[in-house]
Length: 404
Image 1 (spheres, rainbow, N blue to C red):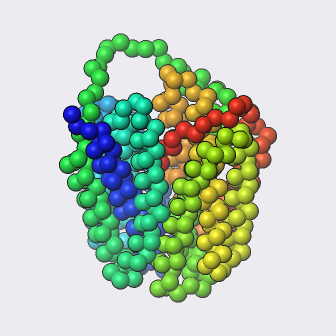
Image 2 (cartoon, one colour; image 1 turned 135 degrees about the vertical axis):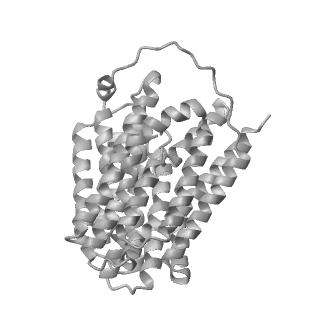
């Protein structure tokens, strides 16, 4: 019998390698767009925002279609399709000559996306029921650690090989992930299909569950803040006086700090929820995050930038995981997947819109993007504190599906 542990190893390794490859180059898009001939800092921010935002936007729209295909033909085929498309797109990005070429390629990438959630689904389907939580958690950690390491590697590669050649390296990472999935992962047997149709809970009834709609709003707002840094952080460092050679390295360090501490926030959430309600945890996490972001925009020294951004990441990770937990706690088993579909849609919408709004605002003021993040976090703190219903006893965390 094919060992589920071998499947788990293949999925975890492929998730780590794939997410590392993505973050080798995406944090440095503003610098690459400048190399393509866009010189106005506002236009750079705008193009970066649109390019980063178009992929998750299209992914959110096409997710139901690919879900149907996966139910019929299996998840392995879909992951292989996604990885092949990433190899082609990343390689093509190394040859672009205009900013709109990047935008178009990211749109194509969005159509074939879904790699992150699918690996979690594959882990859950492969593992024995008693090992399912462990399997999902392991893959989730790999997805978090990839973005923590990728920007550092990318920051070191960029000055040596150039930003354009870094896309070939990223494509190579996806090729390795494809080989791992193809050679090591075996699709588990699927249950026989049935023609019986069960009565479905209306969407409106799911949205009416306690705190559920509020949790969707919270997830949207948190992703709005979390994904706003990508289009403007390198430009912010440029305005602070860092040299052209220093910006990729410093930006890579800061992006990695943010990714690593966000992963730590997931673990901190489980500890806090043993003693406090989701309402208390989310409210305090976003308040502390707003304070840390204030320190960030008033700082110039690297150590203070890193320390404040670490606090921001820790707070965002804690709040995001706690929000997913609060949403999952009110879902009956028969609509659990549908409910998480709503939560994922809210999160993906924030992921898609955030870079665009960040780019538009950055075209007027780079620092204004971070100020807007402080305002959003402050509003979330007030709304959660006043509106969210306390749940007693505290709930245990539910694994979070991450998007790329």
